[in-house]
Length: 283
Image 1 (cartoon, rainbow, N blue to C red):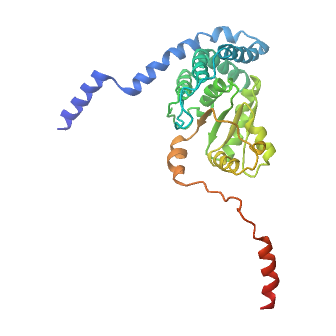
Image 2: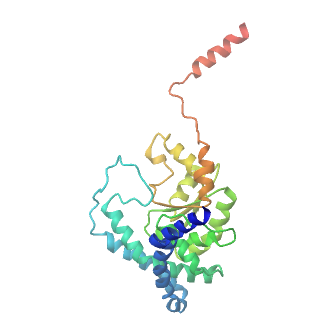
Image 3: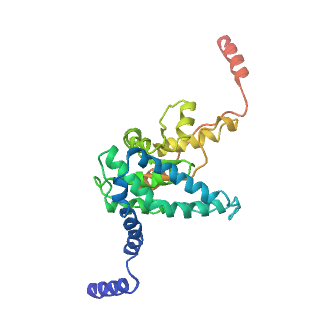
């Protein structure tokens, strides 16, 4: 019976193909295209390589300048990863996809110069998968931190902010300082959000091109922002793109623990408390 089941599975696989293999195959052209820039980019001076960031941003601005800000989905439609909600979102997705090979190649060359770490082709594929809102499974030691720099750099070019979500404060601080050298070399700013951080510092971190933090801190900052009395007091910016490290842990295991924060009391009972404190000694 087992042999028959295996035979059926093999037949179905041959007939329809393996889903993962199809996805990997679809990413290979981006890797080939990115590799084609390697010889040219290695010859660039530091200033010329750094100048690529401004060049990419200009390409994005040119692609969006004449696009009307027309909604394609109603505001009450639930938001989903990679969802195209406006005409500008659609145009931005298209231009980022066209820039992807160039941007990945620039990031690889910058990594070689700044970090002495060069992205491998398989890391290019992982970065492309993340950009297209897929989950990329990698073992410990295969360079997840370096892989994340590729889609993070690419999406930070849009100027809407890119978030990197880690599982603890140590990793958030380590990666922001470590990979921040790469982003800084390419002209992008990096911010870090952490527990018990002053609001003004948090707001500055969220306004950076790339922001590192933990899932808990992002969640509590969202809750705190919803309790603010003025829009000027908000620390977070509108959400655009995020890379989630240890996605199974954060979105499955830790998601079972709700984030709860106390709100401001609607009524003040201070006067009553003062009067009772005066009465109680007389009892």
